[in-house]
Image 1 (tube, rainbow, N blue to C red):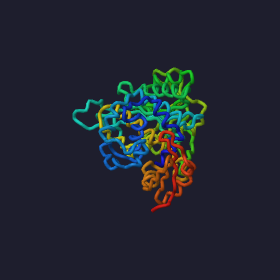
Image 2: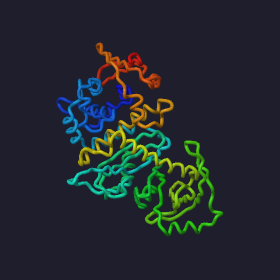
Image 3: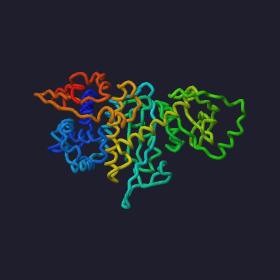
Length: 413
């Protein structure tokens, strides 16, 4: 219930209606999506595990129903959602969760979602966590490193087209925001040098930072760089740790890439082999280049968070479109949590699990009188933090339900 005012203020209902999601004579598209979203927000592992919430009237009210639909209804619904509807929805969401528009930076990464079963017809994709190729669904996840919002997901791509995923995201962002991304950050195997050349030659001159593929000859050349060409750079971390890194800032040429590209070589940075960063931004300060790529690890943290709370690693089906829809809802749930945490001082970097445990795992009473709904939340240790949120301290008109929603804090125990 706590997310209802947020959903109203952000315009999520309108985004659902614009996406042309399936509907029936009994269940509207809004009720269906909100039913599935409700289970996502509380960390429900599988649709088949929803029996705990079958008769919870508060969750039913959240979805504009008396109680949530049965698991068979919810499961069959997800099979009917097309990639086109997911893409329309993601386009609307990228306008709602805007992030830092001025910087326009994005971290991009692939997530291999495994599927277990002898009859699986899925392609084999490389899984870094298991250090082998496994039957799985390859999904793209894009993150705004400034806000932590997830900006785009796609679980429908085929292995043979994965190198073009970066270009697909650029097209998506242009469609949704009428502008190109300004900076893309990804690892060495994400795309090809040929596609890097396309980004560099684009009308907007899209900047990128990535790793150069490291080979024996490349490593040997590092030993030939004279000592006076190296410099020591101090990189300050978020935990006030200062690391001294030995850096060489120069230029190089790549196959199928026209012109020179900037190459930053890192040594004495905690790894045995040198790291080769490449970028087409020749004006950015050296420290910034290093720090921006280091922040790319944040998207991997967000993926780990989704695996843990939204159970991304446990798909209930080998049908790609079903997993794609599940991933789209995970993006929405994740971003709603991020909006919440960004407004609670001291909890901005807490995981979704922590926020759910401290703030949302709570009970209360619901009083309905005419069109007014008052939720009396039980006393809880972290409840005073919620009391500081303006949108929970004022009465909110929930247009989709035709009610006025109000919260009362700490009145029962």
